[in-house]
Length: 147
Image (cartoon, rainbow, N blue to C red):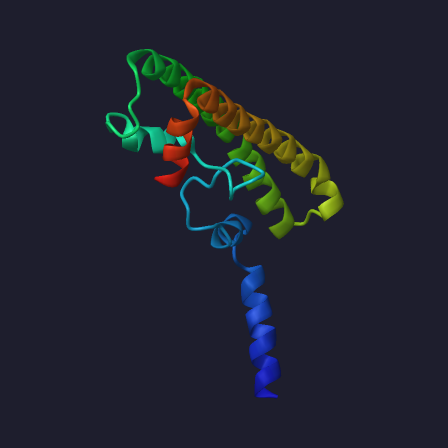
């Protein structure tokens, strides 16, 4: 009997929690989760290049540095723009499912999120491709091995 009372009390108390608080409680601890569909197995070369920028073992020329700075700027701008669009949509989905919306009602929002994440993934792939083109095979290998 006591167990049933506790369960009923727990269920009632959960329904009193505001939807936004419930949605926040399931967030991943990362302040800015990656906006990509593929979050593993693809290197973040912009970050790696930053670590090894002046490393003589990598040996970047001034021309390469100029090219890589353009790639970095374009990539970061595009990813930040997409991330800014993804975050509020994900929040709407989270709040919706903890509110009174069905998965079917949230489907169009989820589709919007997936399309934006696909675009962000393509930006990431283009960054890897362009970086690979700007580096020699040895430099690219060095970068992959020293991340």
